[in-house]
Length: 287
Image (cartoon, rainbow, N blue to C red; front, side, top):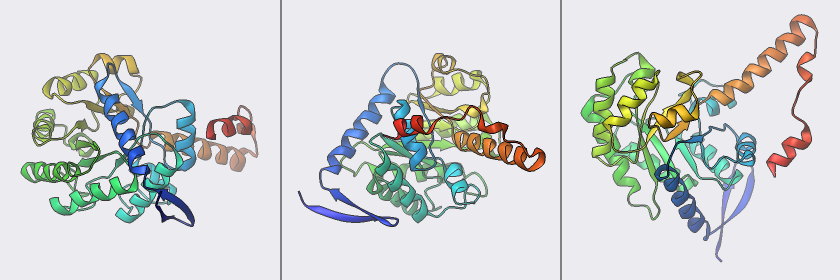
């Protein structure tokens, strides 16, 4: 085999030509998850360690989280560059053999062609899917422009030699526009131009999930933290296919750090040390 060397932060790892076959296999596996009966959970790691832990637990695919990754850099969501996001994708793809889909925000560009280029670069980084959203960073893109951007991304990934799963996101509900009719109209238009999966971020009831599922003929991703108390079975019965958790796991880790820190500072106690996962269990999952 011809060996090419690519830099992953400070480390060098040999990349063999056969990895493209491996990426194609991951892509096919990821595609198949969306075609089988029922719903599947796609958790969102924020670094290589959390990715390996989730893989060790038995999850079948992973998705990046823009907010979780930003937190690792000490920043807020939306404050990461495209180059940093692509390096993050390479790191996660090197950490596990699972299919990985990337939260690529708005493609890091307003222009359709420039945004579409991001999806080709993400594929080169090793992911087998990615999302494009209709939030500009300041507001929701006008309808026609939002659709044009999705179409450009679809056309770009169709030039790849493996089935890249493109997810198109309608962000109304996350940004104070609780207009389900407009959200559905956008999702239907995204499907019409070739999106493989659609995603209405911030739906808050199972009834809303059912309405979205009934309106489109593609798999629907649901962001679970906005439906507290819901179960996988309930979401599957509503017709949802892919269940993501965004930055919630990263925030769960931060919750523990904050509570433990306050206990030490305010009360001088270390009660948080009881019940910790053992180093041996972590090592087992990381293998």
